[in-house]
Image 1: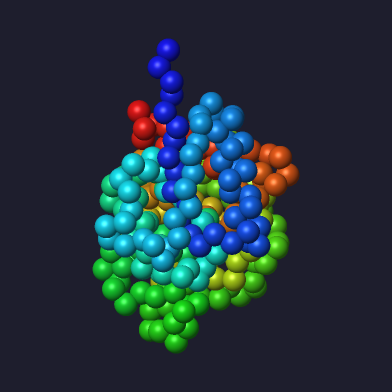
Image 2: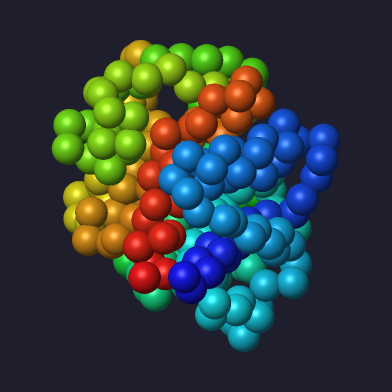
Length: 236
């Protein structure tokens, strides 16, 4: 019997063992791989090393991880654009959500002046701005959009997840941002945007919360499992 090839997954971000999510992600992928029957080979890609010609073509999936501001914002955005345009499965969590939204705004909406408010707080189009209440080491409920990939992953329309985040989508731009291909698929207990999907992409999901944290409690994160399964379909 032919041996199954390992799934190659890029972790885009500047690895820091002090970041809880960075400790959780490899474990989350390991648990998801065991659950789905896939061997996973992960590679951390420091944003400072990502250029237009530096992202290998052999990745079955891309996960843009928490930990912004990144050392090289352009590198992170390039990796996200690669996944979007080449139709590779993509998962963005926390900072990955913020930069997935930023990449989409610049390159799909034509908002070339869109910036992250963490870096340029006074900009005219600061797309990501401080949350009214910082979500640092907090857990909140989520309402998931029926029929969305994220709802299918969880197998229900409600969930509880944890955060370590201070920035979200600027409400002034949210309606226009979500007017085309990018769709809201999760909102929190007060109705604020917490996850988006590209519906015309095989798997492009970004969450402001950190589903990977479940792995630290020995639980398989449903969304990570769905991401791994999407990567396996990409491989085949």
